Length: 322
Image (tube, rainbow, N blue to C red; front, side):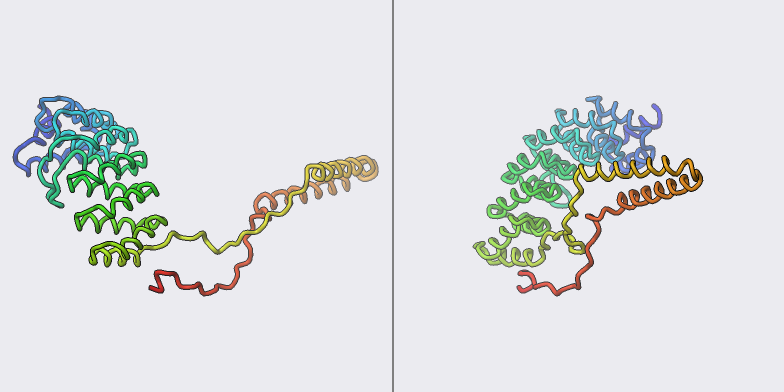
């Protein structure tokens, strides 16, 4: 057994220290171990397949995308969970549709998340991955999971919708703000609405701050509303300048024809008497025309900035007056 195969075998060791050390060495070896890891992942009898999937995600080589997509349908629920998380790390859009299907994986939890204490599920892992991919196509499916009985799934969905950040995603959180019972998740929804101040989000925060039946939540919504920054207006350094009317085709043709006639007359009458003078005048006319054309091309008059007006104090916003 070569060194790479031995390290991959150690990913399934019972000793956590051995697993971590083997994983670190494999990460340092990088692209050289991707093919052996994929072959081990596709071996249904290999004892380290969940950790192999996780290692492929950390290495970040996109050769692993298709094998990890196939692993989303693996009979082993732990392999499916780590495959979903790995696809989120790889950030390849080929995984979006398979991950949307994985949102409805019905496996029971694998235990508790050591950080949040939430049950670990494939649904939550798929939601997390879709958030990292900023997959706006997943918003309708994620919206359904805002009603999931598993708090860990709802937490992952709230985070994912905030990462996606489209108007539809934030509107889905607006609808969930009234029915969410968990205090921590409700606060996360409110914070997310404040970070994405679409009109619907600001309106929902105002409604929660004034109409929610629980006083503590009204206070939290009011605080989030005060911290919400309105969408930035367009820059005021330049004001709109009406474009100058362009000459018609007829006048452009006439100007060109007159220029040609002028040059033709110059050569006809001047060539016989003074050839050097004729060439000098023609060269000068050509240089002037070329310089004028180059200047017009680089600084079109209808795009020049208008002079800046003196700064005026702006009226205080609604949030500032509060």
